Length: 321
Image 1 (cartoon, rainbow, N blue to C red):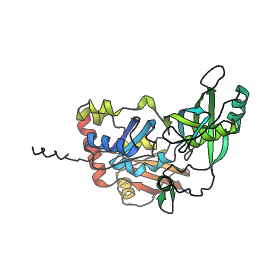
Image 2 (spheres, rainbow, N blue to C red):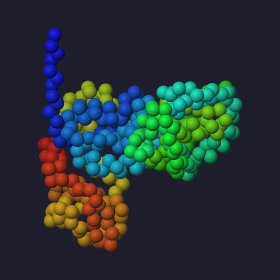
Image 3 (cartoon, helix red, strand yellow):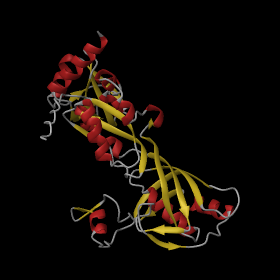
Image 4 (cartoon, rainbow, N blue to C red):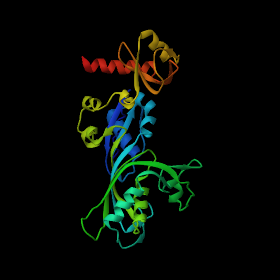
């Protein structure tokens, strides 16, 4: 019996940010491709990977929003995790092979000391099972080939760290971790380092990102929810492109200045120096791009294209009608 031909999805321009609660077991790219297919979007990208065994906040950028995705690659993150004590693995999480098992003698005072030790500026050696690249090749590719690559320790910032034993009294088998940290922090490595400091070793059994750059779980939608929606409901889940620039100084330009700014020309005005500026047109009030200001000059950084602006305006107009 001949299989029926697959229906080709008709792609379309879609612009905005989808806050996805990534499910367990899917890579970030798999989740992105699924959402892209559901929205029938032409262009999409994510703002930093979550491991397949991690869940939680994953901002997905569509169309013009992809131009500003780097802003959330650099954003601070918040995680909740569970670390199993007494067992170390080859990957630092439950996916790896068990390397060593030890008894756990850690006390509440030990955990308090570890919390203080790992709060603030700390140094981490990136794990072999990570997407960090060495000579153009991801570290996990070396790891899968059984090759250990020398990695330099990197400084990261732990803004807040809360750790507690999962059980009130011994024997302690796990710790619950809540952490707010800078970009580039590996929570698997944090769990391993805390386990080493407690003298028993540890590996992560659960990891959930609860926030990134001001976006939280309360704002997210799941793939299952998206699948149950019709197309208009899915599009209504998208935040506008400017949601990625929420912390930027806002500048609004009149029509003539807006047109010149979009052509890449600097504009002059009474602006104080600012490194992050979101620039809008006056009529209609639409994001034109990002910039910075210095010595009274507005200097373009990333600009929307005329077709993108037209598509966004047309979409906004149709929704408001």
